[in-house]
Length: 199
Image: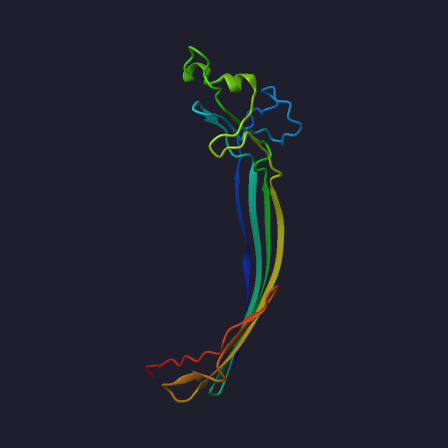
């Protein structure tokens, strides 16, 4: 008796995204002469030491698509129960992240003058547009974002023959082996796992 079957796994799709509202301005809208700002607009971080801080992560999309095809066949003859099959999977990962493109801006507080308190000069650096480093924060930091389009093709095959030694004890013969072929080939060590049957 021979039995066979084909199985197709539906493509899986996962997508996560983030981004500010469409009405958000950029630092250019606030008067900055910075040469480059991404679209859509975003303000990543504006901070004043001891004062305030505001901003949000810019637009980003993380998309993963996987396509998988597999085939499994079983063949029973006499005391032999043979099984074999394979799988092919194509993986696609797309990352479009504008992280650090809008830039970060940090402002310090000048030293109070004679007769002044720290609160009186708290926003002087911000109002003057003077950037500076403080407490591990750079006065100005801008990056190029992160963009990836990873593609992968992976495949694997297996074969196994179960030989029924008696009505109560079937055992794999030879021990089953599985192999995977792809960017990095790998194989599993032979295994043997007899299963007791009640009858």
